[in-house]
Length: 148
Image 1 (cartoon, rainbow, N blue to C red):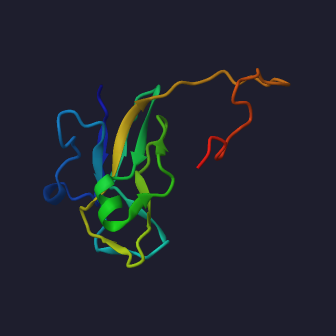
Image 2: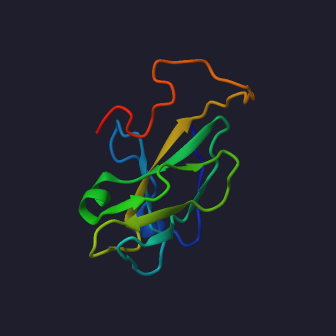
């Protein structure tokens, strides 16, 4: 499936390369920080980092923005709204909402890999208002209902 990607003027293709899957079986490809100077993210701080690209997501699909495991483990960086969704109708710049969970904070440099993007199919439901729902064995149990 084709995913058209527009590189915006502040994305340095010569230095950072084009977006690509790193390995043959990868589900996602990395988005990079399209910033002119390093950005420090303090503990608990939320920062929006531009990725310097826009996409034409095919109808019936979304692009999910997910944390990178290496950034999470090494720097404590995570995507706040994980997974973020890029809808098929959106044509603006992709931006990644990051937060740092390590007390010492972390720095993002120009061209650093920020998050991974995964193209996924979307099912649309017919929304139907009802007065009650069918019964199940679980019922309304949630938020820890199965134990610790």
